[in-house]
Length: 314
Image 1 (cartoon, helix red, strand yellow):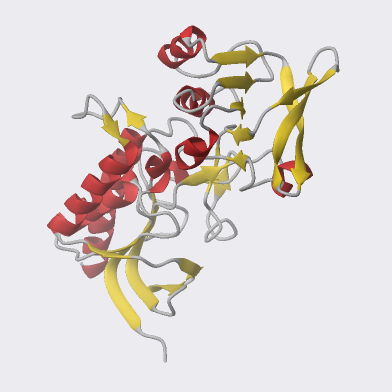
Image 2: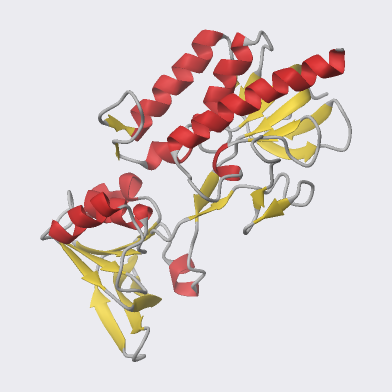
């Protein structure tokens, strides 16, 4: 028979929003349980230099998340390595079934499941995932020492990945559909000054080219967005960096969403369309998507959960 655990506040997700919610919920004596999910620490664990988080002139993403986790534990948050597979929000207490078999029930839930990398949706991209195609430069960049690689995208993610990959690659070609980067100006300036990076404007990736024995990437085919001309570029690695989509699988058919699946919250609040369910971080933020704003929303969610529970008890 499955174990059942009850908590006043169940936090699902372990990025800046989840860990900050844990700190505030613990300080409110709510004894929260936090479930880390598939990727403990969230997207920051695949980020290298973080230079815009207050209090840290420069910190490695994984190190920052370790500090946040330690802080949440120190305040009393019970942190469990488990994955929620099904969520019943039809009645309170809410019920969450997990991969471990444990059933969690909660009087309030804070959703902080974050977002994950988007893919182009090409058959050839899918074929070579893990064999030269990646969405995580910090995970896989080391394997491309001295090689030529390609990065696809034009926002902060793409520029950060391209800059990081110059630590390993002999050459990085940045493929972008436009002729202007959407990243922060400071990042764009760094990219344009880096002699290892060659921007390829007005082009889109249409095919990843490779071999089957041994399986691996040998190049990419790109199409000029204005002329339609197709060019093949030799490379050993392809990094897709076209943004992220909210990890909303648990609630996309239950909670109100917008802007491509982001959970809707009330104005100036983390309250969702179901009372007692709160959403924080990249699951709901389609605009800023920063670690510091996620942490702020985690704080808001915990304070609002505390207020909600007090009203219920009253």
